[in-house]
Structure formats: C-alpha cells, structure tokens
Image: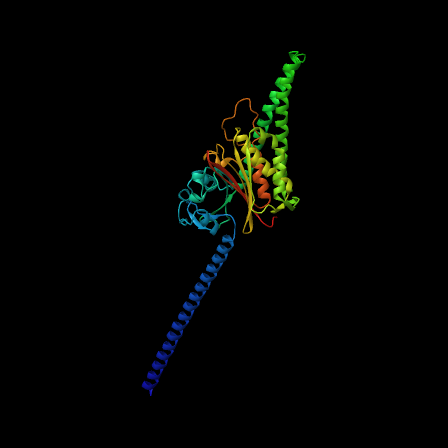
Length: 404
C-alpha cells in the first residue's frame, strides 16, 4: 500500500511537472509571438510614417535633402533627384553631389556651427546643379540649411532646401542693365546738346547765322533721338507692367496696317530707292489684336531693314498668310544680313549690330526689336529670325488666328 502511494505521488509530481513545463513553454511561445507581433507592427508603423514623410517631401516644389553629421546625403526628395539628373545621391558626400563647391559651402558652415544658414549663389552655366540640362546661362540659387531637433544621443540631421531663383535674378539683372543702358544712351545726346549750347552762348556765335543753323540742326537731331528713346522706353514699360492685359483687341485689316507704315516711311524708301514687295495671298486678311502695337511692330522691322542697309536697290518683302490656326507674318530683306554671333542677342534692349555706321550718323535707340518681341508676346505670339548675309534676312512672326 505504501509503495502504491509512493508511486502515485511520483506519477502525480511528474504529471504536474510536465504540465508546468508545457504551460511554461507555451507561455514563452506566446510571449515571443507577442513580441514579434509588436516588432512587426512597429516596423510597419515606422515604414508607413517614412512613406508618408517621403510623400509629403516629394510633394515639395523645391529640392529637399537630409544630411548627416558626416555631410553625407541620407534622403533626397523627388525635386532633388530631378535637379541632379537622377544621379545617385543617397550616402554620397555633399561635395560629390554639387559640381560647384560654392553650393556646398553654406551647408558645411551649418554643420560646423549648428546655426541656420541662407546663402545666395550665382553660378555660370557650366557648374549649374542641373548639369547638361542647364540652358539659361547664368543661374542663381538659395541654399537654406538648418539642423533639425534631434534627441541628445542621436546623430544630428540637417535639412537642406535648394531654391532656384534664376528667373528673379535675371529679371533684376535686366532691370539694372536697362537703367544703366538708358542712362548711357540719354547721356550721350544730352552731352552733345549741352556742348553745342555752350559754344553758341559762351563763344558769342549766335550772330553767325550759318554756324548757328548748323549747330541747331545737330541739336535737333539729338533732341529727336532723346524723344524716341523716352517713347520707346514707355512702350516697353507698358508692355511689361501688365498693361498688355488691357490691349485694345479688335479686328483690323492687316493690309491697312502695312499701308500706314509705308506712308510714314515713304521719304526714306524714296531716298534709298528701296523696293517694297507685299505678299498676301488673301489681301483681306483680318487680325485680332491691338492695331497700335502691330503698327509699332511693322514700323520697327521695316525701319530697321532700311537703317541697316542705307544704300539704293534694297528689296524688302512684307508678307502674311494663314496656315492652320496661326497667322504667319514676315519681313525679309536682301541686305547685308546679321552675323550669326549676333542673332541670339538682337532682341535684347539696347543691343546693336555694329556694321558700317559712320561717326556722324545718329544711331537708333537700340530698343526697336525689343519692343517688337514684347508686343508679339503680348499677343501670345512668337518671333524668330534667320539671316544669310548678302542674300536674305527674315523675321518670321507666328500668332494665333483667334488672337487673345
């Protein structure tokens, strides 16, 4: 009996131990499964958070980078990848990513000091971060860098925003150049007028009628030039200040516009014995636009052809035809032409192609072709030029048939 009790107790103990071990192992498995489930959930939450962050940063219009304390790129948004031509950026030192070291200097200063940095950098086309995609010439960028708030024991992360301010920079340069060039262009005729006035008044030359008339004739030419420069600057100012949105758009016969400018230039055409050819398959073609500005366009183009070729026998063709949804308008001549090196610049303000002009000849304002371009753009059109010196120089304008 005693042996049976002992055996039963032993079996009970073994059974209890087996149950305990089984339950313990099961509990450990459940705990491990719960831990793994929590890890997986945290990883998924972290991945979702990163994906959400990436989507938000990819939505930014400006290139955005995250850089670690070793100046290596840890994140680049879509705009940054596009800016750098989809080159590999992650885990690369910042100096390797930027072609020009001046772009990296602002960021490196932020890493060294921990202070926010904003730096404006103007670069030549060859070292633009856009690489071979850059076709705007001089380009300007703002590098905005600042350290993010990180836990004390973590690696500091710096965010970098790269803003392309090339357009604003170029507009500012155009404004500065315009003021400088306008001042120079006005100073020259004013100095000549003041010089002749000084001679007339201080040297008592008023009694010499022949000399006085010659002086006054020169002064009148330069006064007319000042008036033309001021008028041309006002026209450009109106076109670029938003007044182009208030153009007086109405239908008008293009042929009547041609007749107006030929009447204004009749004496010059006659003196140079120039021949004007009008090519219009449909002489009743009607344009939708501001007739005042279209008269300015034609006048400047034809006058420019006459001024650049001041000899007899010049042939000028004025044409217009409807092709598809656009009007094609052109002014062509068989004069000396425009050198290929000058073609990209002729629509710039105050740009002149130096040719045969004598010192006594009164120069143009240098604004005519700039006015032409601005007026056509205000009508949602485009203008281009081709030139084969001695054969043909042709200005071709394309504008929508329906106008503005």
